[in-house]
Amino acid sequence: MKHRLLTGLLMASSILGSAGIALAQDTTLTIESWRNDDLAIWQEKLIPAFEAKNPGIKVVFAPTAPTEYNAALNAKLDAGSAGDLITCRPFDASLELFKKGQLADLTSLAGMENFSDVAKSAWQTDDGKASFCVPMASVIHGFIYNKEAFDKLGITPPATEEEFFAALDKIKADGTYIPMAMGTKDLWEAATMGYQNIGPNYWKGEEGRLALIKGEQKLTDADWVAPYTTLAKWKPYLGDGFEAQSYPDSQNLFTLGRAAIFPAGSWEISVFNTQAQFKMGAFPPPVQKAGDTCYISDHNDIGIGLNAKSKNADAAKTFLTWVASPDFATIYANALPGFFSLNSAAVKMEDPLAQEFVSWREKCKPTIRSTYQVLSRGTPNLENETWVKSANVINGTETPEAAAAELQKGLDSWYKPAK
Image (cartoon, rainbow, N blue to C red; front, top):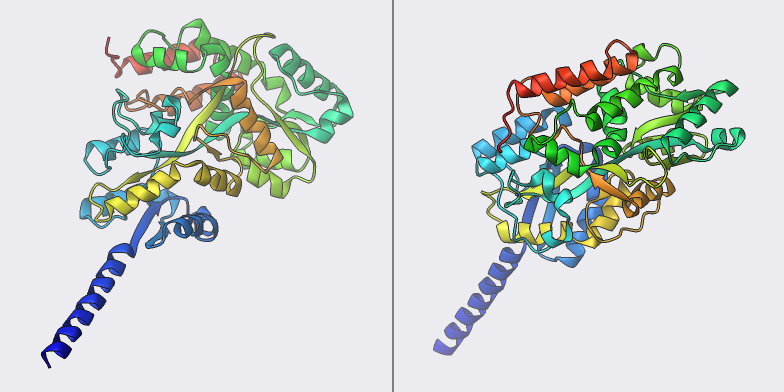
């Protein structure tokens, strides 16, 4: 009797122990995100790839509508009900969460060594000593063009500004196409696809951007005014009524084959692939003269961090280390062409247009948009003011010098760089 009782107790203990182990391993992680468009990609590609290599850890992607994400996330974090993993917007919004103790410090996370300082800059403290999100993807600026139009007119992708304007002149003289599809109605288009696209070749990328933050350069310096001088020369090539042309109007003009060139961000790729009935190519912002170092805006766009109050921190860190791996980078970048891995490891891109954009990293120096870090924390907001001034300059209602002076005056009113 005693033997049978002891055997029964041992069996029960074994069963409970096994159950305990199983329960401990079967951890579910929830990801907060604004990218509801990516739900299928996470469910069908990313999560299965992770779970196959990490049995016992389940992942749920639970996105919120983009316009509601920040408010919803902040409410959840304050209430202690947020998911384990937090998709991070770049720069100041995520920095504020870290300062409030709501994002964990990931500086020593395995895999963070796979990212450059520029890649990590959107999710670091100002001094660069702490990183709080794993970089996932960036978007690259440049120009997308209609290959059929270029072939018809005997134009090759321009490498210098002289070649760029010569190509525009040739397209305009032919009259079949609007040389370049870009409007100024929505303002941001003029700044993002205009000023921030070509500007890094003038202010020398990170060198100029960081000098501006340190107060060693001003927006009235020659290297910051010059891009506006070039933008002012775009006006004759944008077609009739460009001042009333919205961003969707610009997209339609290009994808319908009515314009030859589109000043672009790489996020256009997946959209254009489904809409354009012609072959497309891309070229980086032309340099001022042959032999100059080229710079590209390779702008950090999305990262992912750890909720500091997550009860599944170890499992979450396992997931984040996977996100920092070349394996994740390859799946993500090909699932969303135009959103490029920030991982230092080379990623083989399947989409030819995406391949072209990402190849520029091999020959050009990367930087991020000049207004996004530190310089738009006050009022007037430098990013929003740059939208207005870029549109004004292209419209011809304000000179490059006057626009730069107003921007610097606004910045001086609240920003006092530490010396």
